[in-house]
Length: 328
Image 1 (cartoon, rainbow, N blue to C red):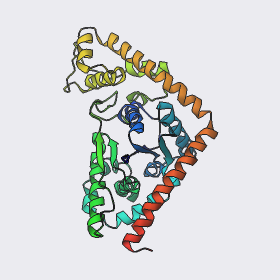
Image 2: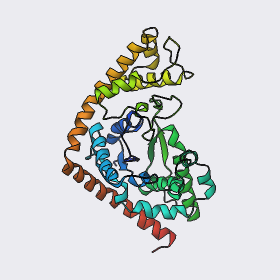
Image 3: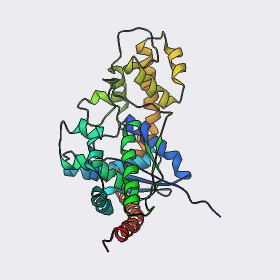
Protein backbone atom coordinates (compact mmCIF):
# COMPACT_ATOMS: atom_id res chain seq x y z
CA UNK A 1 0.00 0.00 0.00
CA UNK A 2 1.35 3.43 -0.98
CA UNK A 3 2.12 5.64 1.99
CA UNK A 4 0.25 8.95 2.16
CA UNK A 5 2.59 11.91 1.90
CA UNK A 6 2.68 14.35 4.78
CA UNK A 7 1.53 17.92 4.17
CA UNK A 8 3.77 21.00 4.35
CA UNK A 9 2.36 24.52 4.63
CA UNK A 10 4.08 27.90 4.55
CA UNK A 11 3.80 31.33 2.95
CA UNK A 12 5.05 34.90 2.64
CA UNK A 13 3.25 38.24 2.89
CA UNK A 14 3.08 40.27 -0.35
CA UNK A 15 4.53 43.41 1.22
CA UNK A 16 7.63 45.20 0.02
CA UNK A 17 10.53 43.49 -1.68
CA UNK A 18 11.40 39.87 -0.99
CA UNK A 19 14.92 39.95 0.41
CA UNK A 20 17.83 37.59 0.94
CA UNK A 21 16.53 36.61 4.38
CA UNK A 22 13.20 35.48 2.86
CA UNK A 23 14.99 33.55 0.14
CA UNK A 24 17.64 31.84 2.29
CA UNK A 25 15.45 31.35 5.35
CA UNK A 26 12.28 30.23 3.59
CA UNK A 27 11.84 29.91 -0.16
CA UNK A 28 15.09 28.10 -1.01
CA UNK A 29 14.36 25.49 1.65
CA UNK A 30 10.90 24.79 0.23
CA UNK A 31 12.23 23.67 -3.15
CA UNK A 32 13.50 20.26 -2.02
CA UNK A 33 10.31 19.53 -0.07
CA UNK A 34 8.16 19.37 -3.22
CA UNK A 35 9.17 15.82 -4.14
CA UNK A 36 8.64 14.37 -0.66
CA UNK A 37 5.54 16.13 0.65
CA UNK A 38 2.18 17.54 -0.38
CA UNK A 39 3.09 21.24 -0.36
CA UNK A 40 0.95 24.36 -0.10
CA UNK A 41 2.57 27.78 -0.30
CA UNK A 42 0.31 30.74 0.33
CA UNK A 43 0.58 34.38 -0.66
CA UNK A 44 -0.56 35.72 2.69
CA UNK A 45 -2.28 39.00 1.87
CA UNK A 46 -4.74 38.87 4.78
CA UNK A 47 -1.79 38.98 7.16
CA UNK A 48 -0.37 41.89 5.18
CA UNK A 49 -3.24 44.26 5.99
CA UNK A 50 -2.52 44.25 9.73
CA UNK A 51 -0.40 47.24 8.72
CA UNK A 52 -1.60 49.90 6.21
CA UNK A 53 -1.09 48.91 2.55
CA UNK A 54 -1.50 50.75 -0.73
CA UNK A 55 -4.30 48.77 -2.46
CA UNK A 56 -2.77 48.94 -5.95
CA UNK A 57 0.65 47.90 -4.67
CA UNK A 58 -0.86 45.04 -2.67
CA UNK A 59 -2.55 43.65 -5.80
CA UNK A 60 0.66 43.96 -7.80
CA UNK A 61 2.72 42.38 -5.04
CA UNK A 62 0.52 39.26 -5.08
CA UNK A 63 1.60 38.59 -8.67
CA UNK A 64 5.21 39.49 -7.85
CA UNK A 65 5.30 36.92 -5.04
CA UNK A 66 3.85 34.28 -7.37
CA UNK A 67 6.61 35.12 -9.89
CA UNK A 68 9.25 34.95 -7.15
CA UNK A 69 7.97 31.60 -5.86
CA UNK A 70 8.15 30.04 -9.33
CA UNK A 71 11.30 31.89 -10.38
CA UNK A 72 13.13 30.56 -7.32
CA UNK A 73 12.11 27.00 -8.13
CA UNK A 74 8.63 26.19 -6.84
CA UNK A 75 6.79 24.07 -9.39
CA UNK A 76 3.03 24.75 -9.74
CA UNK A 77 2.62 21.14 -10.92
CA UNK A 78 4.10 19.87 -7.66
CA UNK A 79 2.97 22.50 -5.15
CA UNK A 80 -0.25 24.41 -4.58
CA UNK A 81 0.43 28.15 -4.89
CA UNK A 82 -2.59 30.17 -3.81
CA UNK A 83 -3.75 33.56 -2.52
CA UNK A 84 -4.93 33.55 1.09
CA UNK A 85 -7.80 36.04 0.64
CA UNK A 86 -9.23 33.99 -2.25
CA UNK A 87 -9.94 31.12 0.15
CA UNK A 88 -12.55 32.58 2.51
CA UNK A 89 -12.40 29.55 4.81
CA UNK A 90 -9.26 31.02 6.40
CA UNK A 91 -11.41 33.77 7.89
CA UNK A 92 -14.27 31.45 8.87
CA UNK A 93 -11.99 29.08 10.73
CA UNK A 94 -10.19 32.01 12.37
CA UNK A 95 -13.43 33.15 14.02
CA UNK A 96 -14.14 29.65 15.35
CA UNK A 97 -10.62 29.25 16.70
CA UNK A 98 -10.78 32.76 18.21
CA UNK A 99 -13.70 31.60 20.32
CA UNK A 100 -11.57 28.92 22.03
CA UNK A 101 -8.29 30.87 22.30
CA UNK A 102 -7.65 32.37 25.77
CA UNK A 103 -6.47 35.98 25.81
CA UNK A 104 -3.57 34.94 28.01
CA UNK A 105 -2.11 32.92 25.15
CA UNK A 106 -2.18 35.95 22.84
CA UNK A 107 -0.79 38.25 25.53
CA UNK A 108 2.38 36.17 25.56
CA UNK A 109 3.08 36.57 21.83
CA UNK A 110 6.31 38.55 21.55
CA UNK A 111 5.81 39.75 17.96
CA UNK A 112 2.65 41.67 18.92
CA UNK A 113 4.57 43.43 21.67
CA UNK A 114 7.25 44.44 19.16
CA UNK A 115 4.99 45.49 16.28
CA UNK A 116 2.19 47.13 18.29
CA UNK A 117 4.50 50.00 19.26
CA UNK A 118 3.97 51.38 15.76
CA UNK A 119 0.55 50.05 14.85
CA UNK A 120 -1.83 48.75 17.50
CA UNK A 121 -5.01 47.07 16.21
CA UNK A 122 -7.16 44.02 16.82
CA UNK A 123 -6.02 42.33 13.61
CA UNK A 124 -2.39 42.49 14.71
CA UNK A 125 -3.35 41.12 18.14
CA UNK A 126 -5.30 38.19 16.69
CA UNK A 127 -2.81 37.62 13.84
CA UNK A 128 -1.51 34.39 15.49
CA UNK A 129 -5.02 32.88 15.41
CA UNK A 130 -5.25 33.56 11.68
CA UNK A 131 -1.87 31.88 11.30
CA UNK A 132 -3.14 28.87 13.24
CA UNK A 133 -6.16 28.79 10.93
CA UNK A 134 -3.86 28.86 7.87
CA UNK A 135 -2.01 25.80 9.14
CA UNK A 136 -4.90 23.76 10.57
CA UNK A 137 -7.20 24.37 7.61
CA UNK A 138 -4.99 22.15 5.45
CA UNK A 139 -4.16 19.60 8.18
CA UNK A 140 -0.50 20.49 7.83
CA UNK A 141 1.91 18.04 9.41
CA UNK A 142 4.96 20.27 9.02
CA UNK A 143 5.47 24.04 8.92
CA UNK A 144 8.93 25.25 7.83
CA UNK A 145 9.73 28.31 9.93
CA UNK A 146 12.60 30.34 11.28
CA UNK A 147 13.34 30.45 15.00
CA UNK A 148 11.42 33.73 15.33
CA UNK A 149 8.19 32.06 14.15
CA UNK A 150 8.41 28.99 16.38
CA UNK A 151 6.17 30.61 19.01
CA UNK A 152 3.37 30.90 16.44
CA UNK A 153 3.57 27.18 15.66
CA UNK A 154 3.45 26.39 19.37
CA UNK A 155 0.26 28.46 19.62
CA UNK A 156 -1.25 26.63 16.62
CA UNK A 157 -0.48 23.34 18.38
CA UNK A 158 -2.12 24.60 21.59
CA UNK A 159 -5.23 25.72 19.70
CA UNK A 160 -5.48 22.39 17.83
CA UNK A 161 -5.16 20.45 21.09
CA UNK A 162 -7.72 22.72 22.74
CA UNK A 163 -10.26 22.20 19.94
CA UNK A 164 -9.76 18.43 19.99
CA UNK A 165 -10.16 18.33 23.77
CA UNK A 166 -13.22 20.61 23.97
CA UNK A 167 -15.10 18.71 21.28
CA UNK A 168 -13.72 15.27 22.24
CA UNK A 169 -12.67 14.69 18.66
CA UNK A 170 -9.09 14.17 17.45
CA UNK A 171 -9.90 16.17 14.32
CA UNK A 172 -6.98 18.55 13.91
CA UNK A 173 -3.46 17.27 13.36
CA UNK A 174 -0.88 18.72 15.71
CA UNK A 175 1.61 20.49 13.38
CA UNK A 176 5.35 20.25 13.85
CA UNK A 177 7.73 23.14 13.12
CA UNK A 178 10.56 22.41 10.68
CA UNK A 179 13.46 24.59 11.77
CA UNK A 180 16.15 24.87 9.10
CA UNK A 181 19.32 24.65 11.18
CA UNK A 182 21.81 24.69 8.31
CA UNK A 183 21.00 28.35 7.56
CA UNK A 184 21.63 30.94 10.24
CA UNK A 185 19.13 33.72 10.73
CA UNK A 186 19.88 36.48 8.21
CA UNK A 187 20.26 39.84 9.92
CA UNK A 188 20.26 43.48 8.87
CA UNK A 189 23.34 44.69 7.01
CA UNK A 190 23.31 47.78 9.21
CA UNK A 191 22.60 46.15 12.59
CA UNK A 192 23.64 42.56 13.18
CA UNK A 193 21.33 42.26 16.19
CA UNK A 194 18.15 42.83 14.13
CA UNK A 195 16.58 40.52 11.56
CA UNK A 196 16.77 41.55 7.90
CA UNK A 197 13.32 43.03 7.30
CA UNK A 198 11.13 44.42 4.51
CA UNK A 199 9.85 47.07 6.90
CA UNK A 200 13.26 48.53 7.80
CA UNK A 201 13.33 52.16 6.64
CA UNK A 202 16.88 51.80 5.30
CA UNK A 203 17.30 50.12 1.92
CA UNK A 204 20.94 49.57 2.89
CA UNK A 205 19.79 47.13 5.58
CA UNK A 206 18.82 44.38 3.11
CA UNK A 207 19.64 42.75 -0.21
CA UNK A 208 16.44 42.41 -2.22
CA UNK A 209 16.15 39.37 -4.49
CA UNK A 210 15.61 41.71 -7.47
CA UNK A 211 18.39 44.20 -6.67
CA UNK A 212 20.70 45.00 -9.57
CA UNK A 213 24.35 43.96 -9.46
CA UNK A 214 25.36 47.57 -8.77
CA UNK A 215 22.88 47.83 -5.89
CA UNK A 216 24.14 44.59 -4.35
CA UNK A 217 27.77 45.71 -4.56
CA UNK A 218 26.90 49.09 -3.04
CA UNK A 219 24.95 47.56 -0.14
CA UNK A 220 27.65 45.02 0.70
CA UNK A 221 30.38 47.68 0.54
CA UNK A 222 28.34 49.91 2.87
CA UNK A 223 27.41 47.04 5.21
CA UNK A 224 28.41 47.65 8.82
CA UNK A 225 31.42 45.87 10.32
CA UNK A 226 33.64 46.84 13.25
CA UNK A 227 37.04 48.36 13.92
CA UNK A 228 38.92 45.08 14.41
CA UNK A 229 41.22 44.16 11.53
CA UNK A 230 41.16 40.34 11.58
CA UNK A 231 38.13 38.52 10.17
CA UNK A 232 36.76 36.06 12.74
CA UNK A 233 33.54 34.02 12.80
CA UNK A 234 32.31 34.82 16.31
CA UNK A 235 28.83 35.84 17.49
CA UNK A 236 30.32 38.64 19.60
CA UNK A 237 30.98 40.47 16.31
CA UNK A 238 27.35 40.35 15.04
CA UNK A 239 27.71 42.31 11.78
CA UNK A 240 30.71 40.30 10.56
CA UNK A 241 29.13 37.09 11.85
CA UNK A 242 26.07 37.87 9.73
CA UNK A 243 28.10 38.61 6.58
CA UNK A 244 29.98 35.31 6.92
CA UNK A 245 26.66 33.49 7.42
CA UNK A 246 25.34 35.05 4.20
CA UNK A 247 28.55 34.08 2.39
CA UNK A 248 28.21 30.52 3.72
CA UNK A 249 24.52 30.23 2.78
CA UNK A 250 25.11 31.50 -0.76
CA UNK A 251 28.28 29.47 -1.41
CA UNK A 252 27.40 26.42 0.77
CA UNK A 253 30.93 26.69 2.18
CA UNK A 254 31.54 26.12 5.89
CA UNK A 255 31.74 29.44 7.80
CA UNK A 256 35.00 28.42 9.48
CA UNK A 257 36.59 27.79 6.07
CA UNK A 258 35.52 31.28 4.99
CA UNK A 259 37.05 32.73 8.16
CA UNK A 260 40.35 30.94 7.54
CA UNK A 261 40.51 32.08 3.91
CA UNK A 262 39.84 35.75 4.66
CA UNK A 263 41.33 35.99 8.15
CA UNK A 264 43.99 38.50 7.15
CA UNK A 265 42.76 39.37 3.64
CA UNK A 266 40.98 42.53 4.76
CA UNK A 267 37.38 43.71 4.53
CA UNK A 268 37.70 45.02 0.97
CA UNK A 269 38.61 41.61 -0.49
CA UNK A 270 36.03 39.82 1.68
CA UNK A 271 33.20 42.19 0.74
CA UNK A 272 34.07 42.21 -2.96
CA UNK A 273 33.97 38.41 -3.09
CA UNK A 274 30.77 38.28 -1.06
CA UNK A 275 29.03 40.75 -3.39
CA UNK A 276 30.24 38.79 -6.42
CA UNK A 277 28.86 35.48 -5.19
CA UNK A 278 25.48 37.04 -4.31
CA UNK A 279 25.25 38.62 -7.77
CA UNK A 280 26.15 35.34 -9.50
CA UNK A 281 23.74 33.20 -7.45
CA UNK A 282 20.83 35.62 -7.90
CA UNK A 283 21.37 36.27 -11.63
CA UNK A 284 19.49 33.17 -12.98
CA UNK A 285 16.73 33.61 -10.39
CA UNK A 286 16.28 37.27 -11.38
CA UNK A 287 16.11 36.29 -15.04
CA UNK A 288 13.35 33.76 -14.29
CA UNK A 289 11.40 36.18 -12.11
CA UNK A 290 11.51 39.05 -14.61
CA UNK A 291 10.39 36.72 -17.40
CA UNK A 292 7.45 35.53 -15.29
CA UNK A 293 6.47 39.07 -14.26
CA UNK A 294 5.94 39.81 -17.95
CA UNK A 295 3.56 36.87 -18.29
CA UNK A 296 0.58 37.91 -16.17
CA UNK A 297 -1.72 35.43 -17.94
CA UNK A 298 0.45 32.52 -16.83
CA UNK A 299 0.63 33.83 -13.26
CA UNK A 300 -3.16 34.32 -13.20
CA UNK A 301 -3.63 30.73 -14.33
CA UNK A 302 -1.25 29.41 -11.68
CA UNK A 303 -3.07 31.37 -8.96
CA UNK A 304 -6.50 30.34 -10.25
CA UNK A 305 -5.59 26.65 -10.31
CA UNK A 306 -3.90 26.87 -6.91
CA UNK A 307 -6.92 28.63 -5.41
CA UNK A 308 -9.26 25.90 -6.68
CA UNK A 309 -7.11 23.15 -5.16
CA UNK A 310 -6.72 25.01 -1.85
CA UNK A 311 -10.47 25.74 -1.67
CA UNK A 312 -11.29 22.08 -2.20
CA UNK A 313 -9.19 21.03 0.79
CA UNK A 314 -10.24 23.98 2.97
CA UNK A 315 -13.96 23.52 2.27
CA UNK A 316 -13.89 19.94 3.54
CA UNK A 317 -12.17 21.07 6.75
CA UNK A 318 -14.63 23.92 7.28
CA UNK A 319 -17.68 21.70 6.73
CA UNK A 320 -16.38 19.07 9.14
CA UNK A 321 -15.58 21.73 11.77
CA UNK A 322 -19.10 23.15 11.42
CA UNK A 323 -20.54 19.67 11.88
CA UNK A 324 -18.40 18.98 14.96
CA UNK A 325 -19.33 22.23 16.73
CA UNK A 326 -23.00 22.19 15.74
CA UNK A 327 -23.23 25.03 13.22
CA UNK A 328 -25.05 22.90 10.63
